Image (cartoon, rainbow, N blue to C red; front, side):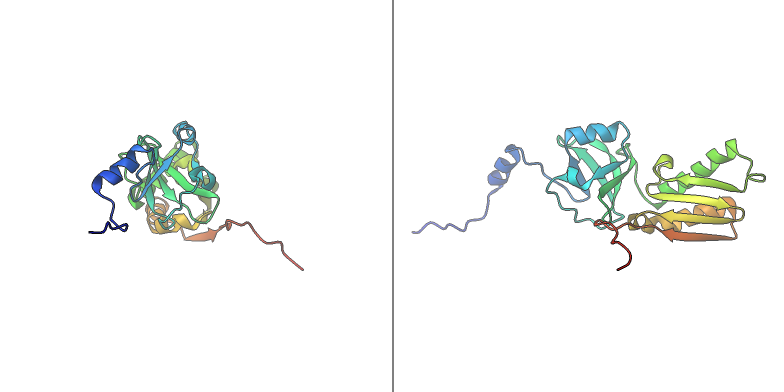
Length: 195
């Protein structure tokens, strides 16, 4: 009888890899170092590509992911960004909160309600209604110019949520029109113009 060298790993073989310190990564989950987790927990809104070391993001831009520290403790939830040096844009530090279109629409309504508390919309016609991460809506700024709105998207990762954002704006403000500006910057930067 000859021994086979092409045997499949047994269950206890997988267990030995787990004990070696290599984390097990689930789909739509990203693990970060304790140092990066500390920064995110204290309010930093982004996880940069370099912080993921050799981890390749397989999730498409716009996918909501759970962010864990190296020990598997929840840090929060964010949205994958594949266009920039930022890998994940944090949306919430509450691991139980679902990141979806409904959450972002609620954040738009909350941002408008906050501005209404401090500004008279009938007298002040030019106003920033949504200020991106400051209002919990990463990479999206929305300005009001009279009866018109301008929505600026700074990454394509937020485009899947545009419909819900626009619906919330229309229900709150009934604008004449919403103009969309896509201000994406590729990962490699922008090439110089001219000869």
